[in-house]
Image (tube, rainbow, N blue to C red; front, side, top):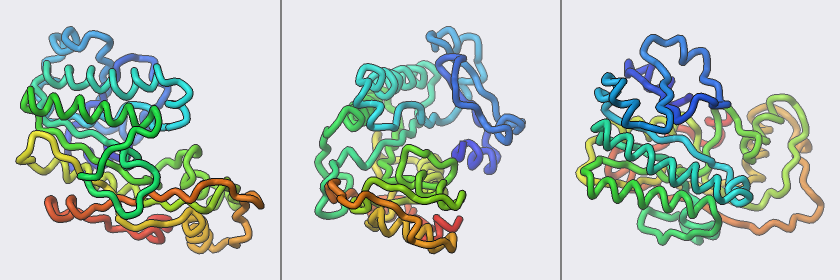
Length: 289
């Protein structure tokens, strides 16, 4: 929804595509009332849908954001994870091939580099399949790259660090912190030790718009969308309390923290150098926003 609003704000015509009608996630009223937005259900037969909807063939780019981003859910249901993150990516790529849409933009994750990084990982860092979620993202990346080479797609893959802001996801640490600070409730966290690269949603959307507006010289490009700055969960929670002018005593953790001090920070230098993009928000600025 953040991306759709940003595109509509730039005067783009946005078509939301769904593979089936029974989608539980409601599109915001602000988007649906915009005359430049429509949502289409393509069903299980994209070739039939395309034959009946010639206007779709005028689309210039596809953002494929559908899938399961919850690592625990993927681990508990690997078959659904595969269908949602790999097979669906294949279906969307085929849809684009049939529709003649050559520009393809996809959000991957910095977790493909693993969870114990001694230094910020750049795009050449070895990929590590540590769980079902990262396995599906790596597989989806490989599919996209194959379509880029064999079908002449202009594909860009953004590997995201930890995104916060917008509509907070209560299954993420940032969602828990932000939601409880806003409501003035205690912030109950399992651990304060892990270090992550937190990036504000506005910077993420700015990165994806940069991908859209840039013609790549390569068939498939990879960029980290990140700040390059490591922030502990403790610092995140304390900064949120500082911004909201509430007591840091609201932060509650177990007396014995048995979690490993994992560290995931991504190096954004390639994105800065190649496409002149860099994040505008510090962690304090983003939390304030």
